[in-house]
Length: 114
Image (cartoon, rainbow, N blue to C red; front, side, top):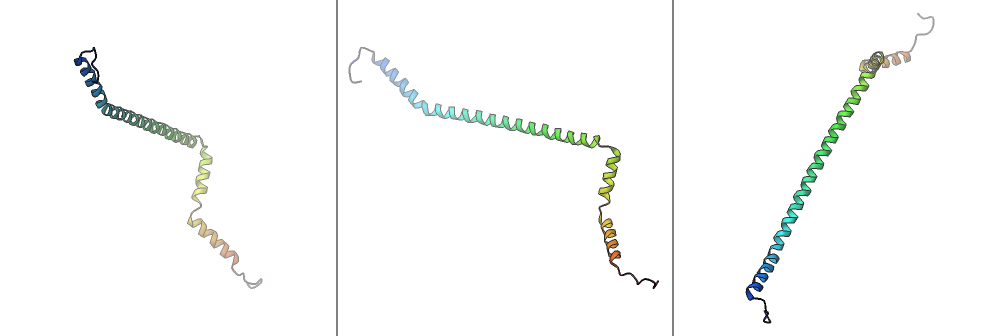
């Protein structure tokens, strides 16, 4: 203290010590605030992640439901016809078609020789 003051020296020492204490604790308080903010942000991140997963699950269930509804709404005869057409496009059908084409190009005997 540079001047003599009318305030008791014990009071000025107590105020000085309080100021030093506040200045000394400031970095720890700031770091604590940062940790709290990061924890809160991480919690919100996980909440948003769970909400997005729930929404995706609801969408996939709705899409599956729509697909099943479309399958059940088809006419049975039309479904059978489509299944038959799909079933006939196998290797055996292709081989039969190829044999027909080859037979068409086969040389025919001259007329009157049979």
